[in-house]
Length: 492
Image (cartoon, rainbow, N blue to C red; front, side, top):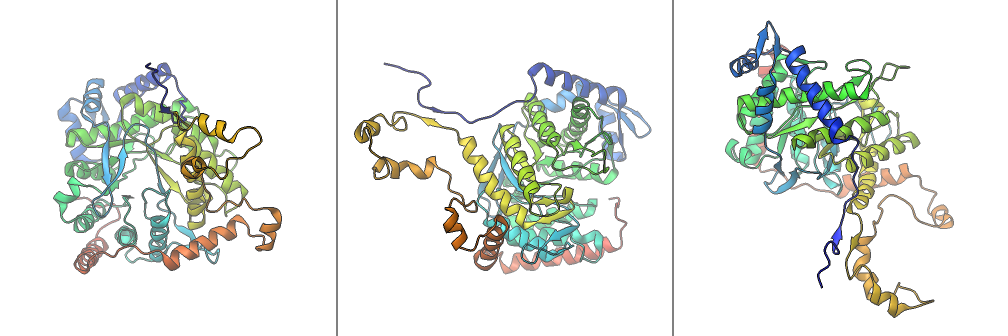
């Protein structure tokens, strides 16, 4: 007998938009690029577009549909990201989901003292070490924008150095100047064993973020072109605030976001056809009561998951946001917003999800939020595994063996399957009330702090070689000297 589709395991998933809705967003985005145009303040980018057939009026570039569609055709549908040692780490394609940390916060909440202070290099090193130890954090960004580096415009070099020395996991980075962007790649090449090796097995991805609505500053466009010239992956995501920097309607925000992300794709393909590119951004709402950009709003998850539908229309990897909160400390609001967004984005099939660890609408990095997020993501990953149905898991024989009134605890079948079938928490308590009380009535915050202390005391990352460390330090010092003499947004 043949019985099709019997042995199977489906992953839970959802879509927000219908195919027809996605198509309407696609068509509207092409119209924006062709009729409204994009302000591009980079001569090389404008020349590439003009040569391809775009209309140029000053710094406004109007890109015809045929150019966009050809660039879409040239873009790979996915790529592999490696770890620091060159091992295969992330298959960025389809609905495969990977979670990572947050960047750029000017402040950090110390997980051991609860003090909030300006972010320091040591905070970024500590955050990378903690993230390296967490099993459900798949990659990292340097957690914060350090405020203790002189000159300030060279801070990104210290941030990258602190991160790459304290994690083996893939790294996504951003910089505030074009030259710092170049230098980070020089540093990464030293770690990888040369630029050719870095191209072959990339362990870093650049995240040059344009200004919304519809502006590519010179340095941001240069970063896209430089990265594409190397043949390295690019994430091109705007940060849209519905009601302020994008239309207040969800559909309008998706149209603008798609046009902006697609423009980065066009630039990357005109520079080097076949450049791996990740569509997405940070779409959310401006809170009309405070004027703040909300990282805990349900609309952030709704828009991000919906944009996953749009990106899959083209077949491209996606970039999103989850595991973050508008709360100011590790409280009930933080837990609710973190869990909601992590589950929503995973169900939406977003590939690379960042910002696990944000407090205060992205203004504070928190290792506590990161550790709690790791627990939430563990639950989410178990949920997405779904239920395996086959002759063994259906358990006919064991049910017959145990029979009415028996129990399954002592059966070999239980021992064989429980670790794969049951998620085992590391932070959540399942004790009885008396057991919990006798052990000190520890809160989630207490257990998180204990876990962080254990990681900091016991977790070790294999050190880079002395020669690599010396070369990193040399490149950083020379870069600091160079950037001290340059304006914040320098030219080549």
